[in-house]
Image (tube, rainbow, N blue to C red):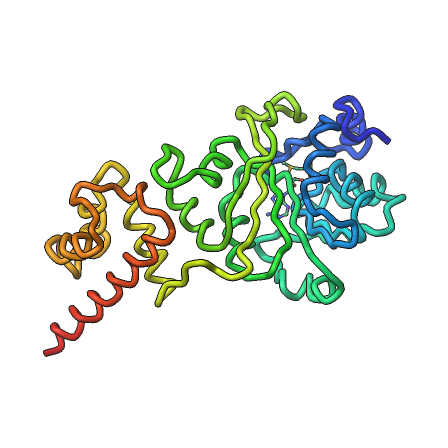
Length: 295
Ligand code: SAM
């Protein structure tokens, strides 16, 4: 069954009386070369479990099932479950779970799989919820052996950007805390049915085995990053002054000077290492301010 053929995709949907559901970001892949490239990029070894998020009608799932020991596919749309039963009938190593990935206890779902060997994530992600899904995967702290995802091209650029580049932002720094991203493939919008309004890119995230930078307080690191990018056109000093009103501009300027950062520097010039250092200094300053207020 050539599920990647646009005609077949429409036929299968019609056969089950279904429409493509925009609220679930249903744009199904129709390019066999792209499908194979994503599946190949997922993991170097066949003895691996793949968690697929959003199998749709099972196009990428079949390709993953042919390459890897086991596939666990999470699909939110209940109406696609009978379709998947039909299209994956000859794939005994696939388990389809009808759940919203945002509600799923991933550690519990994948407990046996992690015990058995490496677990990688692979997905043509629904665009309406890309960042929350990525953050959930990263914050789960599960030791995924790679996260290969198709995302909107601009999001991929953000994930892969280096400090100082135009696309560099809060999501880049957050990602770099957990790992790094590499662009694999550009995929034009016409390779999907229905075609989305934007182009896509396949990106592979590799998690650090050991984080190269560990802040004293993780919450403070993320608060610092949010503040730095919350006011993008402002200098870092002004953005932090708005995000840390309890410290005041003068204290913040002193902290930046202590790090030998120019007073007019913007947040997008700092890499994860410098953000970690900055957040440790802000943590200390907040502690001192609290102490002063108590005295
Ligand atoms: N993998 C298929 C492909 O490449 O052709 C479909 C990809 S389509 C872009 C996204 C899929 O994710 C849809 O099947 C959609 O129903 C599913 N989905 C959307 N939100 C989801 C969620 N929160 N949890 C699990 N699946 C979700």
